[in-house]
Length: 299
Image 1 (cartoon, one colour):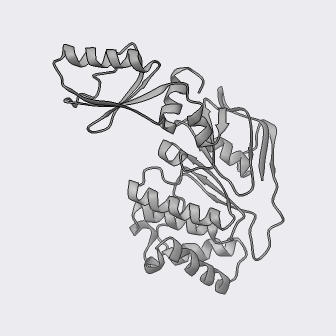
Image 2 (image 1 turned 135 degrees about the vertical axis):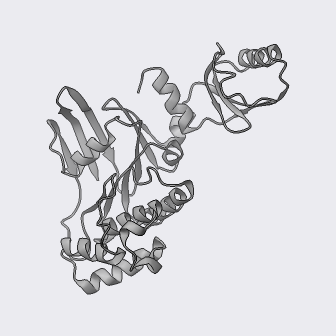
């Protein structure tokens, strides 16, 4: 449905996108992940035709839009609706831009607002919505044309965790209905929810695969450590430990060799007279994959 070949874009001396070639198949949820400044937004804007690439090509395999169904919907990173208009007034405005009649917009709006749980807020001004509700309103406006392809640029950035979960439930519901979704996100837990993931950094697309395959090819072990300490950096200097993260009451350590790392963990804690409760191997996450690739200079 989407195919780019060797896309390049520079802004002054900065290479925002460098030779990116990717394919998004019909029916996929394709996630673009990477840190801020990786080039995700520039790539998405080129795909949507909002920015002209310096070189390369973009091909969207979409039928001509009709009165019943649009080609694609786009939700930008920044909330761009009108705060002094109500929820329904914003929807009517965007519906008219798609050439939809008031009756059609009203019917579709009620359907989508039921899905997004905004139906009771139709008369509320957009400025008075919470962050999560604003994102749902922006999604509603992007969906009003019933697009076959939905493009979302970091739609849950800055939104509370519960609203993020609700937002992704909506995306899954839309995808089950046949919609293809391209979404960028800085959150690795959201990358886990995509059918396919592309890692970007410094303008380059450096790894593309399913989350399962990416985690399955992870070359290291992940140990979950519980000990009588809450010091976040206690394992950060370990020679056998490639990466260490602290999650409230446990540590996740990325290591090369299980036995060598276990000996080092015991040594570090013993020197501080800290009791070790348990060590268990756990499955790698997308965050583990990304951090190690980044440290190796791959992304």
